[in-house]
Image 1 (cartoon, one colour):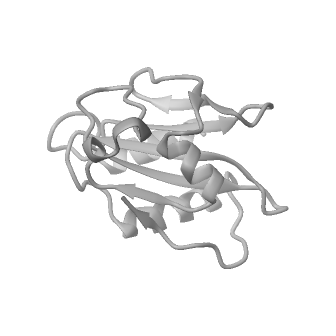
Image 2: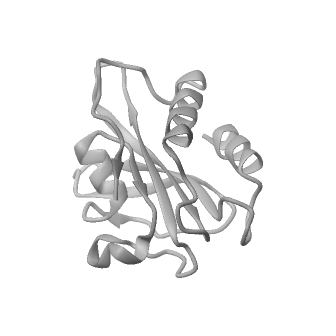
Length: 144
């Protein structure tokens, strides 16, 4: 996970306005399946544990990637760890048996910072690093 967040941090240009990504990290499901806990991240702290009502929880429960162009439209469904963040990407992560074990979560200070190509690239990287397994046909990207 550390290698993954480092690679993605560098690929998206690091922190700051106009630089693409403000935060990247992994959340895993807690044993009670009612919350998620931060596992690895780059470069600043984040909320942990988080409830399942947020976008990470939704990506986990729906087992599909989510692109949020403007987090300000989410209301209660947005867990704001950094009030400067304006967009988000959530990529679910899968075990060999098809179960979802957690999500890769990314934030940006820019609206509309992430695309379906980013979902595809992040998914491929997670599979290449052994953090997720490709499976049967899964639902497409949900754009919020």
